[in-house]
Length: 65
Image 1 (cartoon, helix red, strand yellow):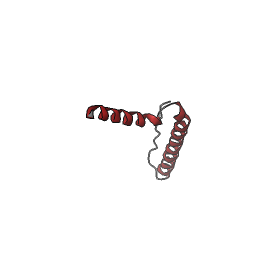
Image 2 (tube, helix red, strand yellow):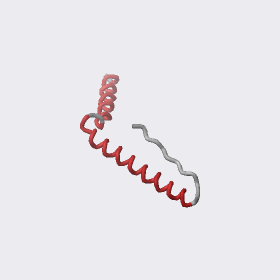
Image 3 (cartoon, rainbow, N blue to C red):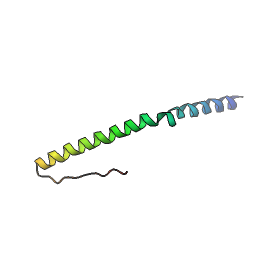
Image 4 (cartoon, one colour):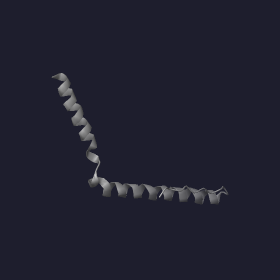
């Protein structure tokens, strides 16, 4: 009886953890991904501007498409 109860509790926890996955979350996740890429690009551009100002070599990261 204890093993069955523990198994049911474990299964409930596993399925509850998958609640944030699925087609309903695509639009939210896509916005967050685009926002993160945008912020990263802004930081990289600012860093390169500072490097140009002080005569350092610039660097550009490439993001996979």
